[in-house]
Length: 191
Image (cartoon, rainbow, N blue to C red; front, side, top):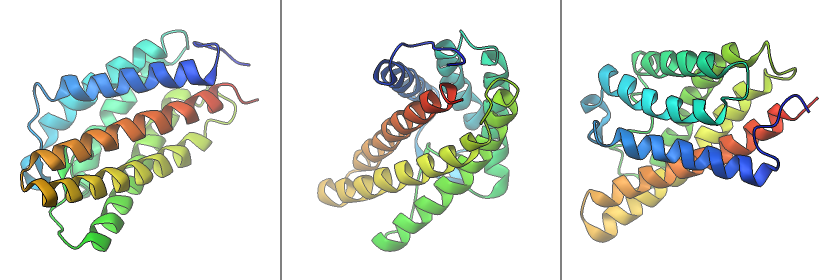
């Protein structure tokens, strides 16, 4: 075991999920959930700073916590330039359910891979199999955004209010927090 900020996978994943989700909730004090063109670079910077700072607290026992913050924020700023939008803070506009799920999976994969590559730059000197994080991040984001987008669309159609979409995004963030937390623990403790 390289280092263990938490003794068990459950406790690490719980801490990571609470930190990540809390960072997302904190970011909502400064960022208004909107559609893709409404959420820009400044919102990406503010949101990613809130989330990466919270995650950095969980990673404080590692040698890469500050690097994690820097590379995570850098990736979030880069993602909107790729046409994906500020992943996790905008609601897809597609109303056709299958296309919406595929679009969310594609955006999640692309954004997750960009995040994974940037975060790999933070961890590769400290974790022997760090390259796996790139794919773990892409898959985690694809799954989480698809689930959140589906739930958000269903809630929006049932309630006819935009809050259903916001709840869907919150569920996506909770899912990505749990999935990336589980994967980070596995990665940190793999040899």
